[in-house]
Amino acid sequence: MTLSNKQKQYLKGLAHPLKPVVLLGANGLTEGVMLEIDHSLDIHELIKVKVPTNDRETKQLIFDAIVRETKAHKVQVIGHVIVLYRQSEDKKIQLPR
Image (cartoon, rainbow, N blue to C red; front, side, top):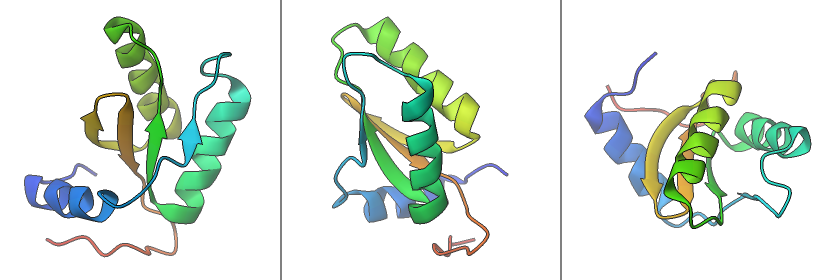
C-alpha cells in the first residue's frame, strides 16, 4: 500500500500536535529501540521518532533503516524528527480516499 498525497496531508495534520514517542539515545538504533518503535506503531499507528544527530547522512541512514525494518510509511521528516504511519489490525485511523 502506498499513501496518496491527500492521505499524507491528512496524516501530517494528525501528527502535528504529537510529541515524539521514541527518542534515540547515545547507543543509536539498537534492537531494543526498534522493538519500541514497532510496539508503538502497533498501539498508535501514527508516531514521531526523534534522532538527535547533526550528521545528515547518518540521520538519513537511520530513518531509512527504521522505515525498512518496521515496514512503516514515512509520512514526513522535519529536522531530527520522522513521522511514521503503519496501519494496525484495528484500523484506528481512517484514511481519506
